Image (cartoon, rainbow, N blue to C red; front, side):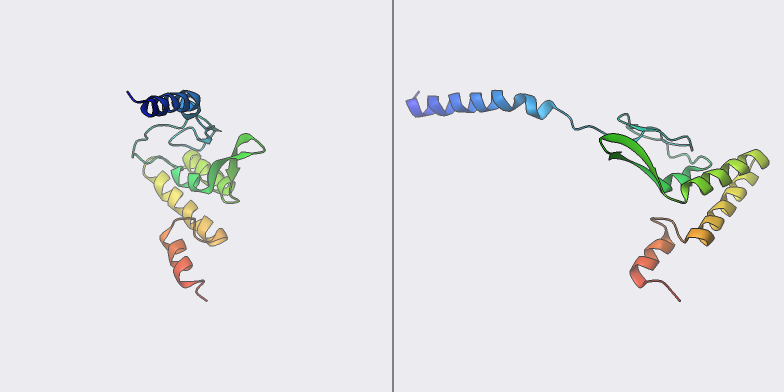
Length: 134
């Protein structure tokens, strides 16, 4: 082997050895740690996959997210989350069977009436595209 080729090889090995540990250090994670339900916690253990089955109150989860605040993983809620959760919990206490879904639908309408369309809804998308309709 030529001297130049050996030198390049030595430099590559030295560079690889110095940077091998850097690639294996993962950045801290912060996310919702469950797929369904209204009792939400934030932390590093997000599920790898969730079922597609809808559970009562899952739509309320669109009004929250997890984020690092002052170095801590915290639950951040929109002003709509608590009224949504309260309404859905009342539905589960008062209604039975399919009536729970109807009650939950009423919660959605009540929230839209009070706060406007939720993020990511068709109405919200139309409002972004065309502005508020007066």
